[in-house]
Image (tube, rainbow, N blue to C red):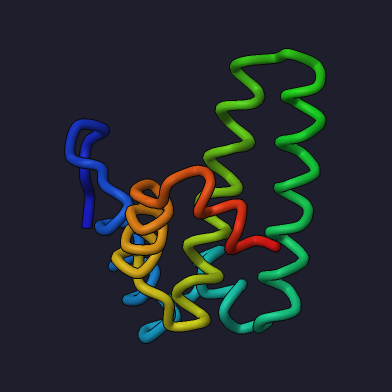
Length: 109
């Protein structure tokens, strides 16, 4: 499944991750993560979070973009492992977007 940059979408990457989870092609980094399991995936998400923070704190835009992309990939791997579809995240974010700020604060208390 080869795509150019213009054809990229998160759903397409997620679908590829699900395929890798199912088929586990040898030599695939994604297969390695799924083989190692949830603890390894969570460790990578944590590492990538830290790298995003370091790059952003250094105000290194290029490195921050690179690390956010790594984080997004690893979060998608986590989602695939946990059976969480991108649509669920979209719906959660959409629901938050329409909540009035005051109401949102009341819900948090």
